[in-house]
Image (cartoon, rainbow over all chains, first blue to last red):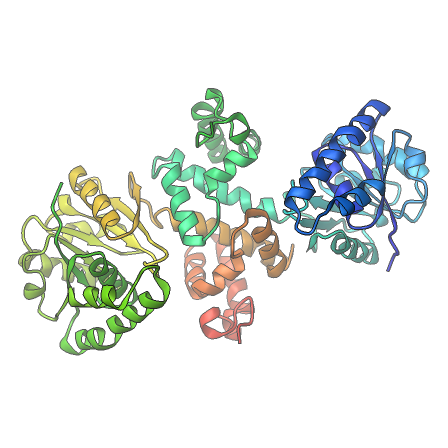
Length: 285
Length: 285
């Protein structure tokens, strides 16, 4: 089993910064990389200190000492060669654009140790789409995190047919070491496990409401009461934001496109795009 | 709005007895009917006293006094005319066989007051299937309860195109009065709301496991953690029992039938039919 000590996280967006902080909080040295000094500086001066505060208020057992120790394990880089020096594993969380992933992994492969493991956090691309650009398809796979990694602590782990089994197992082990519950997948599937479950549920809920069988609130009521879930499907829509399900449905079959049109006409076009907007299926203001 | 005082519950099976007790517990006089004195006697001597004990231990605020008062509001009948005397509403919870429903509602229509509302608790039949036998299609609709009505307190309410709107509203109000959260449906749909959501979720979970994308436990893990739900889809399978989803899938399309075969070969044929058997996707012994 690989002895993972030094970790590189590429990208300081919402997920990248959370992955980096969670990893440092779990005791690993973490090199944080982003495209230039300004972006990196903002992460160092704002994003990570804010995350430290969030951990203090939301993570059981977090103290000023433990979050300070996590911050002290982070180093900040806009030079990829410097960032990749001596790393055992890299986790990529750059924008969801294949060209950008291609470029980042191509460059990374040139400067990272030959035996370093590369992971992508991509939500929408399959690791097979990215593997050809990594220069090490046997040491490459997806490790997919969820927003608010400290509480939504799942890591869906999905290799390609070329991924070395030992590397896969190492990443499962690493996920545990950084406080995640690993969700190992035996083969590739778009949407991993969670979205493969959530998309049909949200689609069925939209069908009920768009078909005027029942109102969103009644649908949520029965789901919460019958399953004990804290949130009904329309509350989940509001949290995700309606644009993402809309885009997924829009690229589906004719039935799916009807649901997309219903979402658009009745909600999105009226500015009811979800919790972040203050209005979605429910009002939050 | 109709002034509902006296309620008839037809059938003393799992749901029928729960509906009757919950209604009596909520202050209504309830006539309990079943096919002969032996069945009725068993309900009176065993089922209802056991339900009273369950309420005492599981229902907040239940006391010996309140459950005794509920028991005192129940009367027991194997004579339908006697049971239906002076009732305002009847709730049918007899076996899920159309011929039996036809016979029960046909007889009931002869002896019940002309303005009494008739409800069916059928899970699998549409109220339209039953309405022709009730003699009062305008005063007939479905009110569908869930097992353990005292905590899974939803009543899915679904009329036919012939159901009088005022009757529908009266039943929504009655559902509230007996402690249910009404889930009003605007038109008929097989599976009501809950199963229209649950079936796609359970199907998607089966697809992931049957397709060997991930193990049931990992699938449940990510669902619980990401959605905050207390149970993952395979835990829900085990609680429902695998036979019911098997039967639903078996009557579906080719993809569904493949999932049914997978359930059968890997679980049902091995005696792993769910929680009640001690084994399903998980072991409970």
